[in-house]
Length: 122
Length: 282
Image 1 (tube, rainbow over the protein chains, first blue to last red):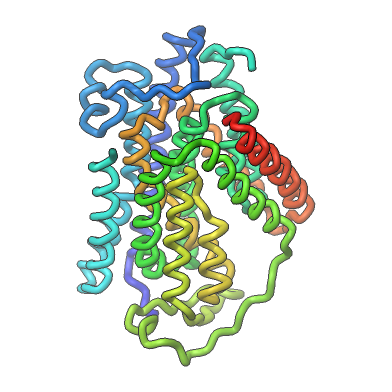
Image 2: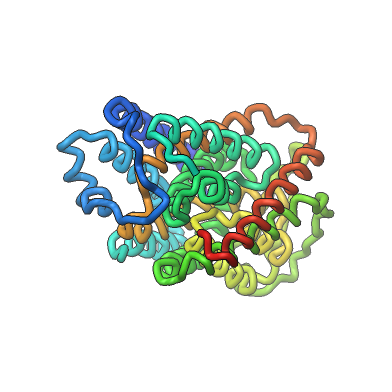
């Protein structure tokens, strides 16, 4: 197997950056949530679906404006979910640079599946 | 189960998740499998919230670990990417089915997966397969064969039975989407037992794929409201911190005793999960 130049180190960088950024945003959101709601008693024993702003990509972005702890946590989790997706896109890009058309196609298929999963949802 | 305030639930969940991540990374069994029983059995949390929190944690730990592994030269990126086609399709299908499956079925299936995981804890390391060039044309056309470092030198390996491995990856994806776990154990079986890939290449490539597999079903879970920020926050941060700590203190020495102890814990959780599933208490 000829290795694809730079592929490994670029993927490594994007993965680390994504996870660290997501963890920081989630921790920040968590701090705000705890500061405001530490003594609430939530009921997680029975399932009740989230409010719309916490359930879709567009909703999470809308919710950012209100700057709630829960909204910020959900935004951090969205960054986390985006990390492997960006990793696939980046790999596809590196394959493209190396004119490895077969694997450009593979990356595009995986990317399409991931975006399909994220967007269609229901 | 006494009702917890946000503060105490966050503290308990973060501590428990830290421990799960630490043991999962020290034993190589993954922390995800114990997160869901911990949340449902210990804290009485609805299994759908538990699955959602577990799924995002799986993305965090696998991406964190993959960023370190991928640089070491063991991960077969091409093989991982092509197998991600199978795991993503499986995961999206699994998440779609999970919405209609009742929690009793999910509990029983989860118990079975836990049993398999416990069983694997008692399996010793097995011998590496020696693979030879006469392989199927498909693997050659896809350029899946690779090399990996052994004592500072690159050793070649040749991917066998690619179609069977690909199919089993679809099943691994399905389980991941259904149960909100990484299903790393099954991915490793597909690669090292079926495709005859060296163990270290199998485990790192499996880990590389887990984030994508989980991300494929995350959208469905998000849209269904399974991802509850108040629970996902302590669980994700706890598991991530635990697994990073585990990776740091993990020495070259193997940890067979720890593996067995953790295996017994998993077996007990499996029995409890199956019992709760049968009694309809999930």
